[in-house]
Image (cartoon, rainbow, N blue to C red):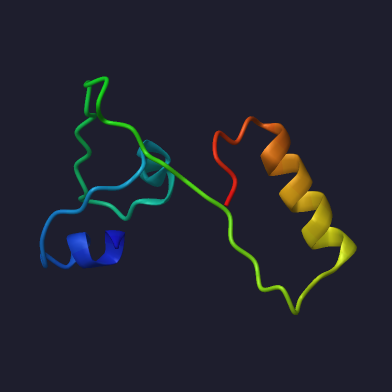
Length: 69
């Protein structure tokens, strides 16, 4: 997404942490609005059921998932 912005294709809405990896010439403007939130989720393929996946999912859910699907 940042590469497209750098190429002049257009603007993008990205998380603030994207500034850490942005190419030179990109300008970031913070959104200071209580409604400007970012819902995130986790996804995994059920066939790749491993202890590592289980540990990751458990760790993320421990952070306080509101509505696990």
